[in-house]
Length: 255
Image (cartoon, rainbow, N blue to C red; front, side, top):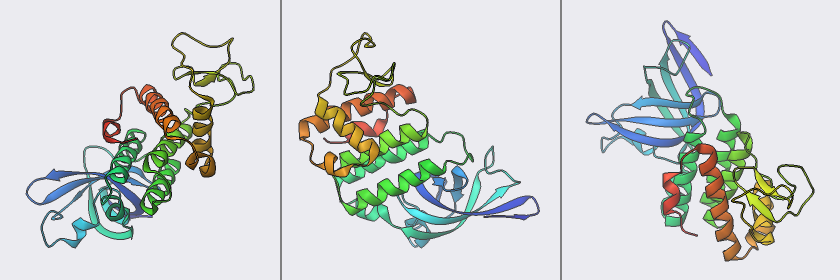
């Protein structure tokens, strides 16, 4: 929702807090991924004061209904928006922060969402919905945190146009299963299409990754730990290749 008042726009939207940065003595800059307005940075005044209830609602992982003022019709540029009101929709952060594995997985999700939405103010509805769903699943403790993270990373790649193949050959389309895998080429490769540097993951690992991408949790949950570890390594390499640099948060995720 957008309302205009002179040179200012009043914007209300749902969002997930990605990151907070200290500003001055009592304020914070909040980076939030919203449903309709993409990634937005806004100043939240006074939220670091001990009596501020407002600040408790603006912690990373929080799913909120947020209202802010921005100059003109745009919410990007030199001028940060001003956050004026926040209501909690789901306090995922509180349930996630009590568990180290969940928290590190969530941190990697937030970093990924921010990296995939670098153009401020540009709608990214699918990325937003993926993040909300992943945080809900993580907070609910239904699956191993690193599996939820890998599923989120694979689906984020897919909605941004980088879906890997884990069955058919990524080069010629030969139906799988195929033995080889290349991050640079887009996934599984047949014998004729394999390139230098291709790896040969176990068939169970490729099956796991395909299950995470498609949402087949029965298959994913039943997979052995060694295949999960191998799969996480392939996912991390694939994400790093397409983001052109690694995710800092991934180094803290335990498998």
